[in-house]
Length: 197
Image (cartoon, rainbow, N blue to C red; front, side):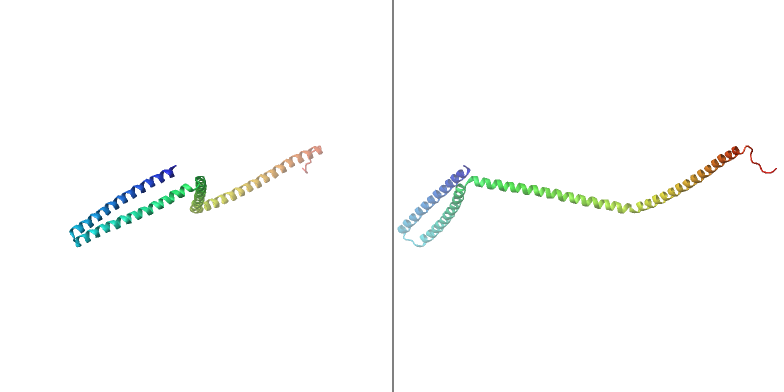
């Protein structure tokens, strides 16, 4: 429908231009006839030559405009006829496919952009962490050395306490053994063994 409207508008415009050119040509031909009659009546060739030249130039300009308008009209007419002759369903289908392709391209570009941003953020985070570690590495080394010294000292103290506890346990066993053994010996012999007095 729109193409038909465009075609009608173009046709009307060209018809208007053609009628305007025909009026101009009629007017120019009337002027030429008047000039010829004037020349014939007056018999002067010099003035009629100048006027004829001016009219000829004007006619050439009008013919050039007319030919240009005819070319433009034929071009527009060919385009409109080509659009009307095409199957609009095929054109719409082609446009739909093109829109789908553009949508897919946009989605893939969007995904690529998001992936790139994620990668950049990840790299930047790794860089920030490495800078942080570099700044505080000496402090961590000192803390690690102090923790190691404290751990070895605690282990040594624990070992010393264990040895002290074992010694005390052995001494306690010996004392208990001596008491229990001493009480047996006293029971075994009714009289306590006494040395010479």
